[in-house]
Image 1 (cartoon, rainbow, N blue to C red):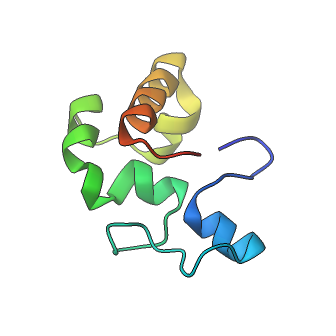
Image 2 (image 1 turned 30 degrees about the horizontal axis):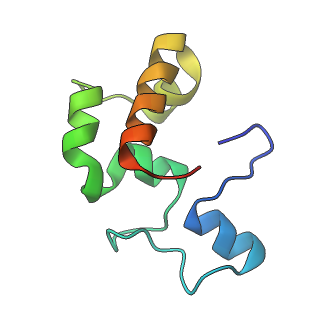
Length: 83
């Protein structure tokens, strides 16, 4: 997510601009938000475990270290999700 708070995930586009019919992620479990994709989306469990070998909180994935940001970038790239 950029510092502006804008992103192209379905939840943001649906809420802000009423783009699309729903804000749901393709997994059908929750709104497609940054936190959902990085932490909970069932479609990315195996990839998430490959990138982060132990449970990692959202703050660490987004803000703590360059290594953490590199892992997050790798994860997002491999999901194919556009943020």
